[in-house]
Image (cartoon, rainbow, N blue to C red; front, side, top):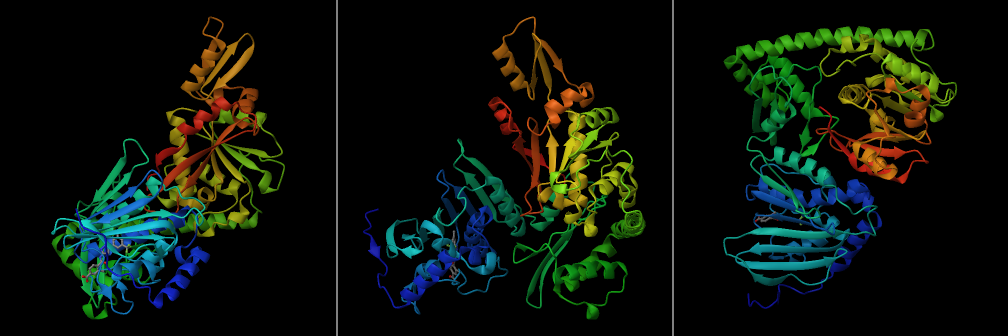
Length: 602
Ligand code: TSJ
């Protein structure tokens, strides 16, 4: 508003040379600073910037962070914090904000003194994002003035200038950057990936609101996360759809020996534990001493042996204290947890016995394959695939239809056991599950060894109806819990049987969706000679039809199951459609229907 552009400083100090060398190093070896230049590294740029605002929130000065993906995949992050300091930094003679963006490792950590800190990847901060962006613009609103600076590939192309005025009580920082196409393998952001991580950050920073907007969609897509309950709400979220053993989420929070600790948990009636631990807001999948402290506190408190003097570590001592008090007030909850623990102990013992049995068996008789398996003759796993077929009758057709050299058939009878609901010893005693484990040859859990996998492709072939989809889900759940690497490394597929057969004048068409059927009818004409059959199951197809429509590698449609293992707290199972090489182009639209199919129950 009538304010002339005012340079805050324009001096080009001697430190500048060192700065440029730093940025060159980042551009030369980006992987060293952000992990990789794949989609993963790209998304880390956003986390890196957002972490600065999160620190501001943890320090108690910021309540709302906005992240906007623009149509050109540039990203804006805005917060309502104090604003990156604009004053001149005595050491460099530059405004602090310029130092933040141009000096490697400077980060946003000035005074420090925050209650907790979020940790960006390797703690490298804004200067790395700047170096790896075609351009980056920062706007700071401070004491009624709007400060602005622009950088290109890490270098300031202007000094910090006052470019306008804002209301004197308005504060905050706004950063917009465009990731450099010369650096990244892809510069297209994935909404769900950002959404997942930002939701996690919101859970970990109670009270903070984080809003994600995708302007590439019309109208823009927006999600907002705000959890007053923090990780308590995270636990409720994880237990959604499960049956808690008791109504309360038990939690504690506090500072001990300079370590800030937050814990929350609630038991459910399932047999799988979901434990997530974070240090400085970063997930620690392997656990660590903080996890040891958590488990010690639980066992010690329940053994009632706790004396504060023996408590080691901040987590252990804080949680033990809180837990003892809680259990005195809620003895019923204590009883439930103890019962649960005893049950779990029994289940573990039974499971160990069952597993020892499988191990011994495979060691002794050189792995006897299940009787129902029609194995392929080729012994090179690279060439081989196994069809898991719903029902004995479809299994029979598949055995007749298959290419014997490379295709094995394992018929599965009836519903597959839900491994989420069953105790481990029952799971391992189940005939269908035992058959799969022996047929695959790669073991489970800690015995899992991918190099022993006997088939490169594991193809789930079920009816194209609700029951078929349910069986497929149960199988995927089993793989996810017992051999997740099979999914992560892309060995699991879904077959796509046709929904309809249309016959006319001795010619045959197959349709895999309703739209496709309509398409075919409009091509061949709607008349009396059309004979349309709706397949209710694989069993209705004769072996030739089954081969032609669903099994023939040159014609079939396979959906590859994949899983984003970046963030295990919300597993998305994704299907990618793979088609044989002779399919008509009109089948392509099936791809659109197969992109993303819900969440696997975690
Ligand atoms: F990444 C970044 F540096 F570019 C960045 C920093 C990006 C965004 C969107 C926000 C921020 C940021 C930094 N938000 N808020 C702050 N706050 C400070 O840097 C700050 C302000 C005042 C004081 C103080 O002691 O008075 C200290 C700090 C660290």
